[in-house]
Image (cartoon, rainbow, N blue to C red; front, side, top):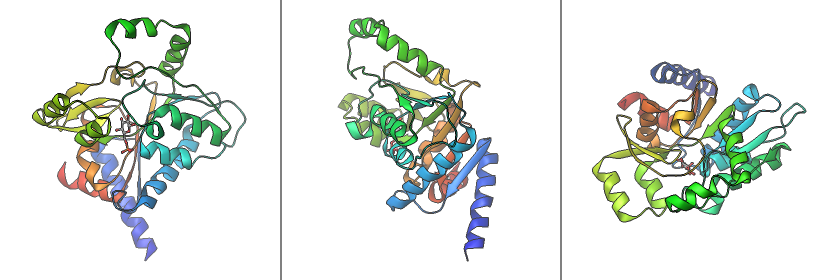
Amino acid sequence: GWMNELNGLNVLEMQLKEKLQLKDVVIVSGNSDEDAWVKKEMGKAAFHFLQKIVKPDDILAVTGGTTMFAVAEAMKPFPFDGNILFVPARGGIGEQVENQANTIVATMAKRTNGAYRMLFVPDLLSEASYKSIIQEPAIDEILGQIKSASIVLHGVGDAIRMAHRRNAASDVIDQLHEKEAVGEAFGYYFDSKGNIVHKIRTVGLQLKDLNEKKYVVTVAGGKSKARAIASYYKLGKSDVLITDEAAAKVILRDN
Ligand code: BG6
């Protein structure tokens, strides 16, 4: 019955929390690789969790992806007055418009009656243009807001799948295979030991910016992402993981 199922998920949550050394783990039932509603449930669970930690005037830095889109779709106004500002975590890293952080922060702000800023930095920039663009006052201002974010909401992807989705050059894809990249987050690709094997150069949050002052909420699920999620936890900071049952079981079994 449902009581048993709930207890089963609670046990998995406790085991995963222990294994990954997290403040919290939330697991929804199912496998988001197979059923779209499971990703929606992860979105709802992430928003539910967010309501517990968000305070008026917080700045939330958000990455792109279909999972973050599901989080955005689950949002409603927060139960307090006070401004929440949504900003993209990093500049363009090769996503389609609908998956871009810029699009997602706009949706989140609209749904919560919050505010948002977009960051327009093209993906492929020469070193020289890059250096001059980040000195533009408007870009500099939003970069400051991004760095001061108190909450970071992010997805994790399978390395090779993400590289293809971003139309990465074939030499980059070869290199990822050669270096056995399994996971991707914030435009960093890493192997199963947590070594960074490739990184997309762009402005905004860098992995080293994820310090104790930021509450990092990781949302990622699906059996096919289990390795990627486990590898992120070898190097990246995270306070809470919102995932699904299928990913949780494989992480606990194989890692
Ligand atoms: C991208 C982020 O937009 O979404 C990546 O830049 C992340 O860091 C990816 O891995 C996750 O995508 P999805 O669709 O699997 O949630």
